[in-house]
Amino acid sequence: MAVLDIDGVSFSHGSKKILDGLAFKARKGEVVGILGQNGSGKTTLLNCINAEYRPQKGAVRLLNFSEESMDPSHRKCGSIDVRELSEHERSRVMATVEQNSHMNFPFSVMEVVRMGRYSRAGMLDENTDAEMDIVCSAMESTGVLGFSDRDVSELSGGEWRRVMIAQALAQEPEVLLLDEPTLHLDINHQFDLMDLCRTIVSERDILIIIVTHDLQLAARYCDRIIVMQNGRIVSMGTAEEVITAEMIREVFGMKARVGYDEEIGGMSVFLIGRDRGGT
Amino acid sequence: MQSTGLKERAVALDRKRRRRAAVSVLILAAALSAGYVLCITIGSARIPLGDVWAALTGHGDWATEMIVCDMRAPRVACAALVGAALSLSGLAMQALFRNPMASPSVLGISSGASFGATFYIAYGSAIIMSSWGTILSAFGMAMMTMLLVYALAYKRAGGVQTTMLLLAGMAVSALFSGFTSMIEFFSDADTVTSIVFWMLGSFDGCGWSDLRLMAGPIALGAALIALNARALNLMTAGESKARALGVNVKRVRLMVLLGSSILVATCVSICGVIGFVGLIVPHMFRSLLGPDHKKLVPICMLGGAVFLMLVDTFARGALPPYELPVGTVTSVIGAPFFLWILRSRKNEVWRS
Figure (tube, rainbow over the protein chains, first blue to last red):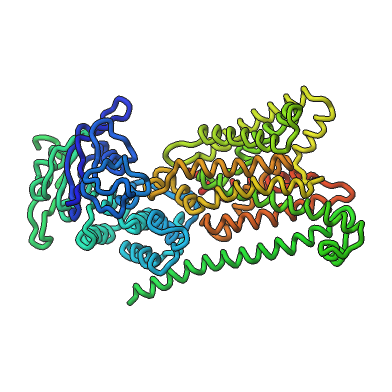
């Protein structure tokens, strides 16, 4: 089984320790949510997974990932450190949607989404029907197909976010990393996006890791949730196991009512207010 | 059902963009060939179109044939080639620096290259007199200047800040102009005159031998950039994003820096500093056709060729009997244009 292995990852920025011996495994076919407050190290963790940062200790490994994404020398490797992969291989295995990104030049939406095909299609077969189908269906699934010709520098924050997600889908990754994907999105698009994540996971059997601080969405849509605080994992498990009033009070300092909701068919979180200790 | 309609529309719109680019290539190619013949007719002595054609095809009288074939034809061709090279290097730098204000003259790369060339003319040519020496010396300095400005202005996230870029370019430019002046100060009067005139930027006296000399390095530089046209699109999204999308950033950056240094150095060694071409032409076509570098590479080369050919002809024919150095004309057009972009594209330029 293909597994992403985060093996004792520590990362410091100067003297400040941001990740402290983080360890967990995630397998293809699940949606993993990473919860935590600002500064808990969530985004740094994503940057270690996609090899943008080099952890001082530990490593992120791919176990038994599909071989067609790899260069010949890396095939038949049961376990491989993400930092050993070339940019080309890595972009075929994983895609990242960052929290902040912008374009300085006025590309069209479709041109930006097509950038996701860089490591899949050659310069000459970029405009074939098959390629167009992949690009268009990626745009359709995030609802940006209707404005494919618009200049990306004129988009709203939410529209731009959906374009970036379409670009990541066009990469056809096996691991999809989303950093606060619902930020700036309208409520309906938030739910569309999370539905989309579930659909992709079941259809393409990929691993999605979502960094978020939205408890409600995490509770409803993630198979497993990891809660981080000060660069460590404080809790890990299914939504029922992890999302508890006690955890929310300890990690987020909020008073909350948590329960199983018949209509949702899952956990519901109702935030009552700031927990001021005692009252 | 509705979604298939949307898809068809999206595909059709994208195809339209590509068709528009293809049509532009055709128009520019036609303009280049027609303009080439027309530009030859203009000069201190006006030669009728019919006579030019006769001379080019080898049926003209001896005097006209000499002016047309040995003087004007190579000169206009040099202007076109240098225009193509300078626009392409500007386009590449703008993508690499993620900033529409980057160009060889604004970043001080031209100053660096001309220092390299001057140095060779003043001291190196005593050892081996060779035009290749000038080009190599100019190339070395162009590459060094480029790396210097890049290191000064690039910040990891968000690319290059315009303020930092312009200031770094200004400082580097001043530094190398200072060096060049120092060389002039210690040179004899004849060398100074030739250096000063060459620095103004002119195609005066460019012949077939110059064209032959430039063709090789310019083809090499252009190939280094053209091969990375698609990667340049991704580089404009920032280095970390480009890496995540599968671009070998180190290799692309090196190839493009090398390519544009070769282009600038070659142009500067042959015809001095001709500023702002690399800023005006890419900017014009980016506004018309969008920023896709696969389209812009051929279009900017053709467009740059047409542009500089026309400007040079204007410089030759505007104030007869004088021939203005073309570099002064591009500066007079370019500097206000530069300010106009700074004003009108405020958001784009200052956001990064």
